[in-house]
Length: 257
Image (cartoon, rainbow, N blue to C red; front, top):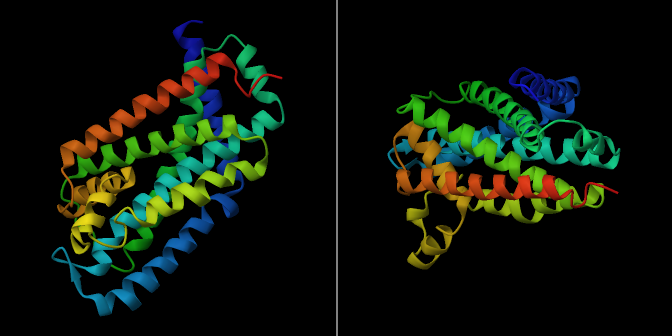
């Protein structure tokens, strides 16, 4: 394929993905906004007023970056896992695999769609947070880089989950039993410096901790982890997940009947 044809193929998949989640915005964009609004009210205002400051900031200011990041990664993941599995279930993914389209273009199209939805929800949640607190971004370029890389990573993870899923029930197993616990234990609502040494060390095995804290550093300028190490970890996981996703597409495992 020529570069122009490759670009057209990529844009076709991306536009299809964007149209998919915007067409059903009541299911894809509105629920996260409502959920995060409730988090802002309950944790930020009601509970936060009793907790006081954390890391030199009000509790509301502290949790907002974590809640934004949580909405981005969960929606990037959900978009790809549901869309790719639906195409696999309908057997339309087989048509893409036998078409003269490089596998990396297919992968990039779905991942870009997941990133688009994650960023859309992130922007909505950010604007919603402005009704509750004031955000003063300290490192905007780092903040943008972290949110993009995190959305890419979880979009790749969603595609891998979709390849292995054998039913619609299977696409909810990882979010329920893995993603949600790691997110809640990833420093979204608290600083790990409040934990005993053993639990601090255990928390550092949670990859989401590094994403949340790197994003919080971009917004507030504070972090519980080394930013360079956090950045490196995200890139490392992207390379691993991206390479494995490409392997699954090339092998056709679970995709071709």
